[in-house]
Image (cartoon, rainbow, N blue to C red; front, top):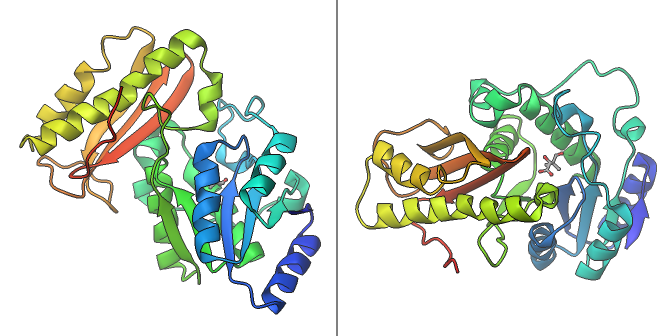
Amino acid sequence: MHVVRSVLELRAAIAAARAGGARVGFVPTMGALHAGHLSLIDRARAVCDCVVLSIFVNPMQFAPTDDLATYPRTEAQDLELAAARGATIAFVPSVAVMFPGPRVVAVVPESIADRWEGAVRPGHFAGVLTVVAKLFNLVQPDVAVFGQKDLQQVTLISAMVRDLDFPVQLDIAPIVREPDGLAMSSRNRYLNAGNRAVACALSRSLAAISQAYLDGVTDAAALRVIGESALTAHVALSIDYLDVVRAASLESVAVASHGDYVMLAARVGTTRLLDNHRLGDPFPALP
Ligand code: PAF
């Protein structure tokens, strides 16, 4: 795997791959790689000859109260994992490489970005979309792979690609879960043993809603109550939001139907965790 840190090196490495006729796949990450990220590399490799993985903890998507300073940085291990999984190029820019001067222009989404995660983290999605747009312009991939766990993020990136005509095909990969159901996330490593056990309540809540829906419950308020009952038993857990939303608009629905999503965000101790599930799909079996 070729590790590059500057824009010039990145462009040269990609130009060399393209000159050999390679189709370029792209997996953007903030590092602290886990099995979920590695599944994104697998999907890119399945359809591309050259897979670019970026590792960049993007300061623009963290609010002053967020965990930018403590966000896990495990570059050496990430590079080993990515190389072993078959990534071709790792792009690891510094903040100065990505944001060399005062920034004047940003990609600012419409009000869909102000609800759910956006309500808790104002400005977060402008930070995400701006850096993803920059990375798309730098890598110019044929295919870019993102994880379904960040439902609002992938919804907004899909909208950006459509509305701003980025010539890239998006591939949205299913959530990868720990054996006990917890959705994989770099932030899971913040959890101590007690909170790690409590965190399983998120997937249990979604599993309960999923089953109730398959059993015929379509009233969104009733589904929320079913989901909440799996969560409220834990004093260390507080719900940020739990709702049934329509795909693409992410607007709450009163009556759930196939293809709607249940979105859940909760704090376990001081760690914020996200999860979601598409109604109508079976939820993976839990122990
Ligand atoms: O999902 C992430 O890791 C980040 O939001 C992304 C897409 C790499 C942009 O910084």
